[in-house]
Amino acid sequence: MRVAFLGLGIMGSRMAANLVRSGFELTVWNRTESKAREFGDRHRATVAATPAEAAAGAAAVITMLVDGSQVETVLRAAAPGPDTLVIDCSTIGPTAALEIAAEFPAVRFLDAPVTGSSPRAEDATLTIMVGGESADFERGRPLLEAMGRLIVHAGPLGHGQMVKLINNSVAAANAAVVAESLLVGAKAGLDLDALSQVMAAGSGGSAMLELKAEPMRRHDYTTLFKLEHMLKDVRLCLEEGQRLGAPFQFAALTREILTAAAGRGHGDDDFAALIEPLEGAAGIRL
Ligand code: NAP
Image (cartoon, rainbow, N blue to C red; front, side, top):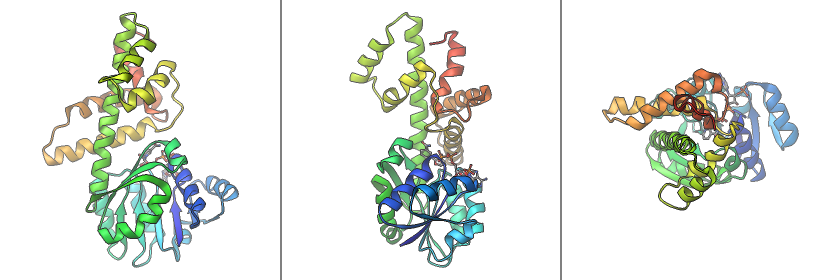
């Protein structure tokens, strides 16, 4: 199957590499062309100069960009032909996914955002939550299975996006709680190794404790998932909640913490950097 892959950032480059490894015939495009050429040098893929060149004759077009307006602009430029399967893996929210799908009525559209940062994109163990019709999901399944391990058909178009927004808001709120727990512990003069060890073994444990406590303690914000992208996801979740009349107060609080961290210049850092404004508030540096 010939596949066009548009967007070779932290996640897209790794996901596209796994499609090549699984034997798909790939044509790639990236806004910054040097990254696409570098990808083409390292993997068996054709490099296209434009989204349209990548999509021409492709049975499927996969996008991995940042937000809805980028996906819309790039898909307009790609102009996928009738019956092309378009799989958008970016996190753009359900409203944007539905609007974009409506703009391309002749194509088959799946929203398929992913969770798991770059290490899981690298080893093809992402979780992928998919919205769309069952027949389209089945058509896209071999591609999705080449990039992820747990592939969940969440429901109709947009439901993959909504699941993703809720999941990331929980993760972000959780990361903020982990940060504050470390700060309270430090102020109490605790051995933070002991605190982390006990929490990890019981009801205080979480994926965020496991993944982000150490980077927070070392102030190592090597980017696995950009803070500004996490802020986008929490903001989109709150917008959906507001539209539905469903409050999500912990997400709202976390949005402000992420905003404060972005305001301190950490937008491109990993979202572990949300500890920075919390350290400021606590008057302590780990
Ligand atoms: P990234 O490293 O910043 O890559 C973004 C990609 O979008 C790059 O290919 C970039 O091209 C392209 N792009 C940015 N602005 C563009 C524009 N105006 N027009 C066309 N292309 C544009 O981001 P990422 O971490 O791969 O994340 C991609 C998506 O996955 C986001 O929606 C994010 O929320 C989601 N996500 C990320 C993670 C994670 O852990 N990183 C996990 C799950 C989901 P250039 O190379 O030219 O900049």
